[in-house]
Amino acid sequence: MRFQDMVPQSVKLLQASLFRIQGAGKMKIHPMAKGALTYAVMWPAGCLIQQAIEGKSPRDYDWARALRFSLFGALYVAPTLYGWVRLTSAMWPKTNLRSGIVKAVTEQLSYGPFACVSFFMGMSLLEMKTFSQAIDETIEKAPPTYKVGVCIWPFLQTINFSLVPEHNRVVFVSICSLMWTIFLAYMKSRHENEPAVEE
Image (cartoon, rainbow, N blue to C red; front, side, top):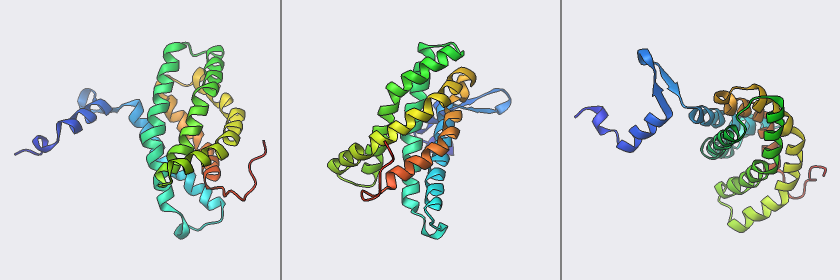
């Protein structure tokens, strides 16, 4: 029996959808897979940077927390962001400043709140918190986090939607999001008795 015969059909289908074989045996990775790989590295990096800023040494890092950031970034954020970018590109196919601004504003009014709530709910559930604990944490932390995001993301997304080619948009946003992820990690780890971000 050959090794290829032992690979389940579902794995072959996944490989075929993520990688395209180009001429001369070159593989081209699907943009969503690029985003997932980028987020799988960038999000835990942001988490670890935030822990370093807190004053932790590498031996004291919460590696399980970094793994949760990696899983959530790769398996949830990257696919939803990829879908959002595809949808907005179909709705506003032009890559000019006007379309970029419209996409950025639309994102802040629709995808932004969804992503913020999803982050706190998803990460809390990955920590094995109860659903009601996840809701409580989301209610406490999502609004101030979203308010900060509204001040940052419209500018970055205007650049993304007006200047960056569609096939590189998820990667561009993931690089920009490293700093944002550091902030998210701070907000996620912030204790109830610490002061909230100024509203």
